[in-house]
Length: 636
Ligand code: ADP
Ligand code: ZN
Image 1 (cartoon, rainbow, N blue to C red):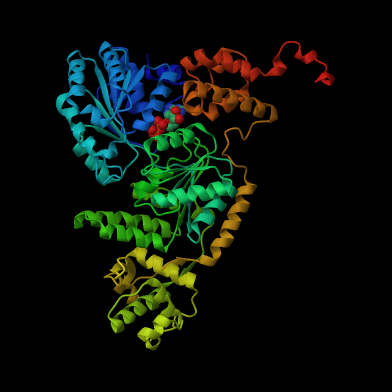
Image 2 (spheres, rainbow, N blue to C red):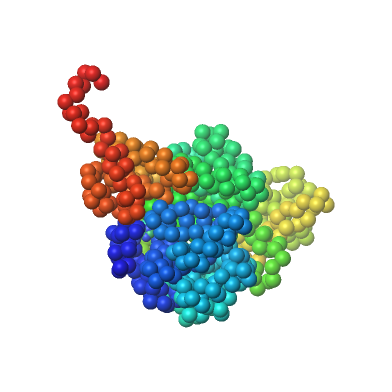
């Protein structure tokens, strides 16, 4: 059977996406591959398809996945497609594991999902040896392959052991997949997994349906509530923040505003985490407030927004997290609130980390790239893609493209600020925090100013013409540029506070060799107003069913209700049964026969056989019941 026939028959998809066909052919012919594709582009198919094809020769594909909490759903989704799949991880007891091993040896399995720490045990390797001797290993798929690299953001030491697969079973093809694409991580993956001979497949990293927006942080919580209420009421989303405490507080606050939200972080008991994740996957309109502990491998297709209330560590993290929005291809938002404190915190975390200096330098470089994205006044997408080595044109689907910000020349303000810091430090011999520096610059007669005699400085009050907001923006940008540094000073109380210090790069600004362009802060309120108007004028693409007429809408709702029942019965998320888009197409076309139903994307042979008849009945509805047309409307 050709790959295309399998695609129609098993998956019910019309055609391959992007490089899928090429990858499937390459791996199917025994080649190794390293696949870099953005989240949601369709990586799983790249190994599932060859797995299905090679299973006809009685061979099994071993999938290494770090996502124990999600294996059950992944395997469930394959079984729904009629593909024989199993998992081996710590959630199985000894007897269940032994049964899976027996089935593996019998050649019953098309795919076996296993945790990385399991793969490298002597027991599992002995199993693989047996299969190998019998020529029954089809393929090794190493999912989330960036976990092997400490430059990636989810380093998993167990992944290092996976090189054994190559050393022991050199003739078995391997495919490694990741959505992390920076060059450093890529090279590291190749080296650590010994994929030197592998063909590299790099897809475009663009996610055109995601709209990027970065707003200046004032009151992040209030801004977030407003964003969700105005643009995503009743929709599923993820909110990322940095600390566990903040996760809990924010989830509470959202709930108090009538937005159903759940917390998720590594400090919660495993059962609670699993329960919250299950609810998020299974319910329609839940918001997950989480640390970055949440989300890897989450393949919920209808996440309509990803919000960051704290700055991520780098662009890779930001892109991977925001990539969890809109996997169904419908429009989605990536929204971030960013402020001065974020820059200070992230810089300090790097400074204070015990890592070696050369490692810190890399971390700083990565943070700088993210900061310049946040400060940029041109197309966000162009910058994001450029970071991944891709050229592109202004996208018309990010905040800066849709509402080009007005900028002002902050160079003079920046010079005033830097020279104030210089003078204050020189006369007092100590460094001060941002608050005091701004007070001096704006000429405020505070107690501290009097205490140190700072009203006598030549820069006292020279910045009075600028607002505090403007000067904070200048500060933030200088920090982002590295033209200003932060130094923590320990207090006798055991706490510490951040002081501002000049850096090497400060000089260029002081000498006027470097200009500082800033966003007009006052314009941002007007911009978000304009954005709201723009939103309401344009019909939202978000709902798969937006274009349906009233009767089709009713069929869609009926189909969803039916799907919810099936999903509950099978203990799987609803989208594993059918995507919204599939149900919407059924509701719209209203097929009367199985062969018409089979034409709809997402309707593979196994699903047609299992659910086809039921879907036709639900779709027909009560007005198709024989004799209904003659019924007297007055009697209803
Ligand atoms: P990734 O692992 O790259 O994030 P997935 O493998 O989860 O992405 O695929 C994302 C979504 O796209 C899934 O819902 C999948 O069913 C769908 N998909 C993948 N390939 C195709 C295709 N060729 N045609 C239609 N839908 C596809
Ligand atoms: Zn843009």
